[in-house]
Amino acid sequence: MNPLTLIILLSFGVFPLTANADSLSCDGGIVSSGDSVVDLLMKCGQPDWKESHQEEITDRFAPGLKQRTYVTVEQWTYNFGPQQLLRTVTIKNGVVTGVKTGQYGPSKDREPVKPECGDRIISTGDTKGEVLAKCGNPYYRTSRNEELREQLGGTQSREVVVAVEEWTYNCGPQRFLRIITFRNGHVIDIRTGKYGN
Image (cartoon, rainbow, N blue to C red; front, side):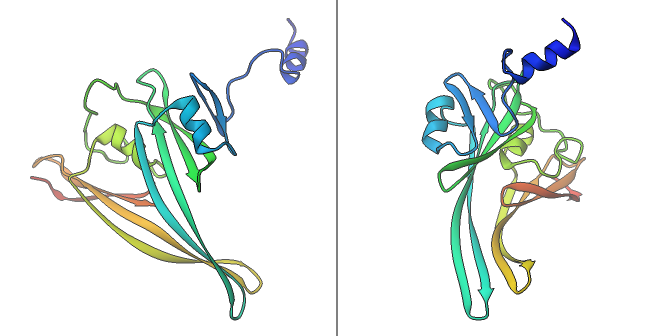
């Protein structure tokens, strides 16, 4: 088959293609952005890890005129085992808004390997579910909220309250503590602390 024929056949959908980046293929069917959380549950079942947080968004339209919106954001991570990639589904107010592909999942019948949990193991942008899959539960967790201001152009601005968490991993007396900072469920910083115990 020549390359031109193959391109034409693919463009008309003759050969099945893998699901795009904003979809997830499960035994029960394909879930895409815009589907409800009920569709996700019926097609893929319960995830291996769930995380949720509230986002508070304040839009300022003019002096004295603002609107405050509260959004529940959930991140469901599916681990299909070591032969497949982790998939994290973002849900806002009960609707799927995106699907992220991670690294290969750990085996489900053993504890995750807990090396240093540093920037060679995890990276900026990873979700909490991915970090849990790679490093296990942290030694210590703290959380707080931060208020950010976004300029939307002209006189419009937006205040966004975001959830910030810090997870500390203690890998023993011969290794440094690893402190991982999350903003709204995603890794934004990985730093090294003192020696563990």
